[in-house]
Length: 492
Image (cartoon, rainbow, N blue to C red):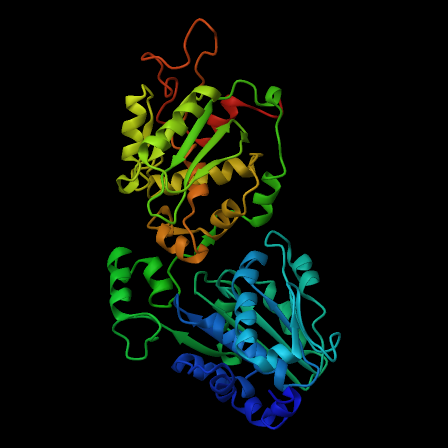
């Protein structure tokens, strides 16, 4: 290979004016029509927004523009952020690394770490920085996290902006102050909320933004080729038709009538994983087991144990049969003295474990995630109710075992309204976002399937008898607050 500086120098002007040509020549891929539109619009538009369905290649487009700007402008400073630090690391930052490895010239000219991309000759003045912000922070603190992106050639790359708070955009727009020679904001996201940077670009601020709407609508002539027509039609059928909020966001690329929101923040989950209650602080709270049985070979079966505000290290196994799984549950049940064990029976995957536990003289309780919630006027189904109860428990002081998977699942599972009732996005969508099944989170929430009262722990009376009913003293008016209060009050 020749000198990368000479190789770049002979093409810089052309690549700067035609980023699509840069992508085709250096990355050896042909952008699809929507991506090409964004690339070619970039040199002459300081603000570009990609309002996109799922699977439209929007993160690749951000990465291509980021590398084009870093290569073709002198001493640029670029900020890159996403809805969370984990999301930035897993998506945009990984995508930037992927394309750097495709082009030997970028490998020669730039170093990439977990925090920055720097030009080897001028690392302090020619760089891209990974920036994060606290989702629970106020506008001032968000601004403090994102300030400091200043240069004559300056840019922000904003990924997954559909869920950003309003405070992000004014902070990023500070790059236009001070009369830089060139400044850009490029944002991309699914249209999940009627607020924040993406909504502003698509509505009240549209005159200032070059907006590209990308759809997978099977009937649209300008649809993205990255999502097959057959897959799009199947999603529409599976998720309740074209008026479904999930279909509007993920297939049609349109803003739904009701916003999507996160269940809980990363910071709240991380705080819960730092808590621990001593046995005397837990008292005689009921001991509950949640068992999520693997649906597919790549998924894991998880046994989750919780007593009041304290949960314990999980048992997680892959590729075990019903006899082995039921044996694990039965031993833990007996050794720990559990008062109830809930098994996910959705899809029938837990049936084998359930039957084997009955043969072992245990009394597991099957749960259908699609079943009716106790508070059916508020929650669309049992899954939604259990997830909300689990998140409320965390917010009220619940202690979780360390688990990046639980944090990712709880923070990236979104909810909206169907009519007047709360509804979680389909598990299939969550699995697509995470790259794995949220088995640990499902096992956690199963411990909130029903109200449970403790069994007698005397030596005279066995823990589990035919006369023991874990639901006694419970009533139809059960809610999480009363259940937690009845078992343990940390302020007594």
